[in-house]
Length: 139
Image (cartoon, rainbow, N blue to C red; front, top):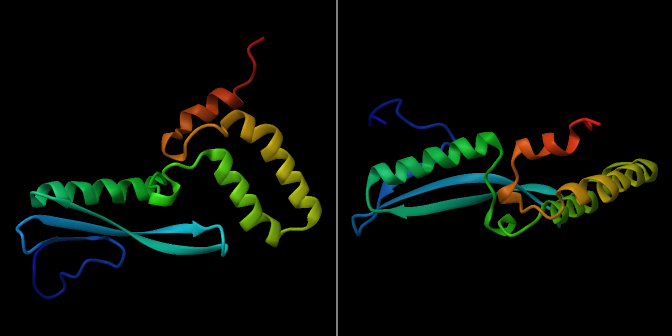
């Protein structure tokens, strides 16, 4: 981006800068859900590359992944869909809905979603996998 008046990047778009050792760092702040508090928090993802182009390419990829919903924070990298759904039920659904609604959602997750997707790591989850599970039976 050109330097000068009016060249400030929008908030949340990330940064690339040269370090004192000559390498380049890139950083992007991403939102994530904290299951303990039930609130959305922010985490800063960073990388260091040898060239500005590599750091910028990483930043553009992270922004693209963030918009596509595929950025996983360090805490979530090893988590499975089943673990995520159980945390979601406990931290998000249970405090915000009635007992009957919670029971219905818990049943749907326990009986349908976890057996179908529970073993998949969040980082390996792809949209086309859902089509296979939810496609009508050809017989």
